[in-house]
Length: 170
Ligand SMILES: CC(C)(COP(=O)(O)OP(=O)(O)OC[C@H]1O[C@@H](n2cnc3c(N)ncnc32)[C@H](O)[C@@H]1OP(=O)(O)O)[C@@H](O)C(=O)NCCC(=O)NCCS
Image 1 (spheres, rainbow, N blue to C red):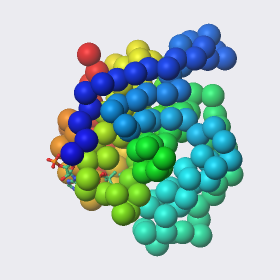
Image 2 (image 1 turned 120 degrees about the horizontal axis):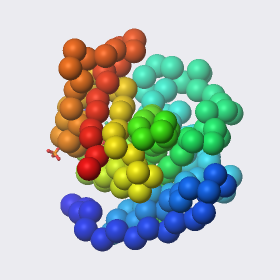
Image 3 (image 1 turned 30 degrees about the horizontal axis):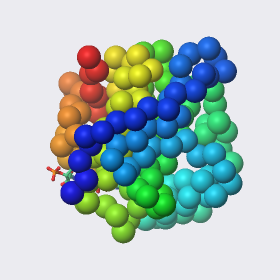
Image 4 (image 1 turned 90 degrees about the vertical axis):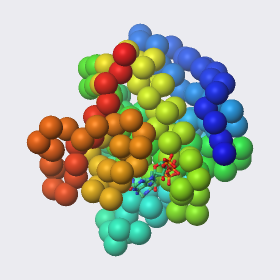
C-alpha cells in the first residue's frame, strides 16, 4: 500500500510571474507535467483508453485539442517509478482548481493510485493558493470522490450526466 508521507516540490517560475509547480513527489509516486513526446503519448494513451474507448467513445478522442495547452491548464501524469499510471488536468480559474479528466490505467485501478493522484493534485492546488476544488464527475465515480474527501454539491449541479463534486481548501 502506497502512503503519501514525504513530499518534495520542484517549483519553477511561471511565465505569468506566479510560482508554478511542475513536479510533486510522494514516496515513489510523482505527479509531473508531460514534457517529452513520449510523455504526451503516455498521457493521451491513458485518456483515450480509460475515458473514451472504455466508455464507447474511442473515435472521438482528440489528442490535438487546444485545451491541453491553454495558459491556466495544467496536464499531469502520475508516474510510479518508470510507469505512467494516471492522468489529470488541473484548470485554474482564479482561486478555483477544476480537476478534469481524472483517470487511472485500467490495469492499475483499485490499488490506491487514484487517491494518490488526487492528493498530489490537491497539493498542487494549495500551492497555487486555490481555496476550492471542483470536479464534474461521472455518476459511477462519485463514490471515489467521496472516499477522497469531496462532497456532492447541494442540489447537485449537473452537466449532462456529470455530478459536481467540491472540496474546500484551508
Ligand atoms: C475513478 C478512478 C480514477 C479511481 O482510481 P483508483 O486508482 O481505482 O482508486 P483508488 O484505488 O485510489 O481508490 C480510492 C478509494 O476510492 C474507492 N473507489 C475507487 N473507485 C471507486 C468507484 N468507482 N466507486 C466507489 N468507490 C471507489 C476505493 O475503494 C478506495 O476506497 P478506500 O480507500 O476506502 O479503500 C479510476 O477507477 C478510473 O480511472 N476510472 C475510470 C475513469 C473515471 O471514472 N474517472 C473519474 C472522473 S469522471
